[in-house]
Image (cartoon, rainbow, N blue to C red; front, side):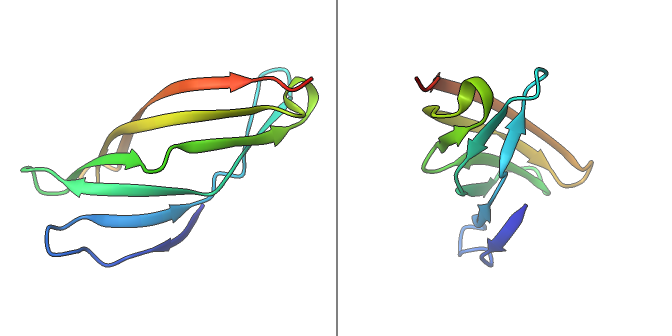
Length: 98
């Protein structure tokens, strides 16, 4: 869910506050995610932006095996507003709570 966004700066960069709330696993466990900031930097191609969450997404607990989970996800990729496509890559670590 988009919470807020800024107008483009002098270089065309956009900043958006995003709240994903949670991811649900195939087993039905919920992984909580903290609010994150998404930076969109224009490329040479009109309507296509490099996207990165800065700072990274923080894992904020959950249910089931993720009840006390912690971790960090580094996310980047691209957004093509011309086609309505978003491609993201995730890297990081999630530690299940005890």
